Image (cartoon, rainbow over all chains, first blue to last red; front, side):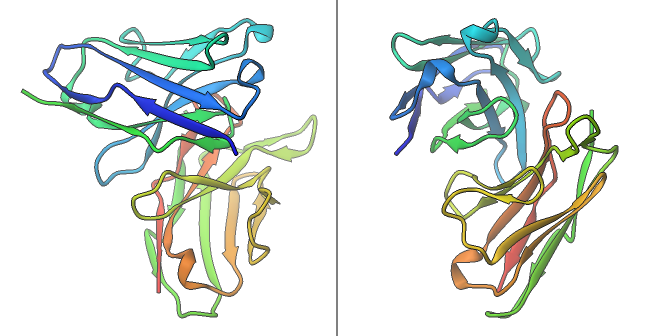
Length: 118
Length: 112
């Protein structure tokens, strides 16, 4: 069974930084496009960004609200996905889900809560 | 960006009855070269992450009960639960993957 386990969430002040990690197991990670999707408390789903597999260039795409502030990366040798979040804003408060897929989100982790507050 | 609009926002259905959720996209998500609609549906139960249930508008993900079906093409889509079970209580989201960024509908809460 595919498992995705996010970590790194927590409380951070506006303007601060945080690095999320996602460990993926029971899946051919290196072949997969990976995405981050977030969900603000009591709200709907918002795609944050994705990274392609290395065969397709390993390039990234981001949603407009986070472009220039968030950076997605991957380490295929460790089956790990990362997201560096800088210049955090209160509106970035959400549960952040790691997902398998760059278009259709086939598998989801349990999520990690990021709270941006002073 | 393509805007996805679901209706209704919430719906209550009796056990064993049919539930219907609609999803409309602001532009067509039908790719003419392969005649596929780039539309997925997700189910999110309370306290859980979303789960993919349908992709290509009508293809059920492995393990999803056949009481769930998706239909529609172009800009108008429907998720139908043919005979509602207690475990189907959830919020359902449609999502287009025709263009970047992928975008979700606001969600429809399905209750008994």
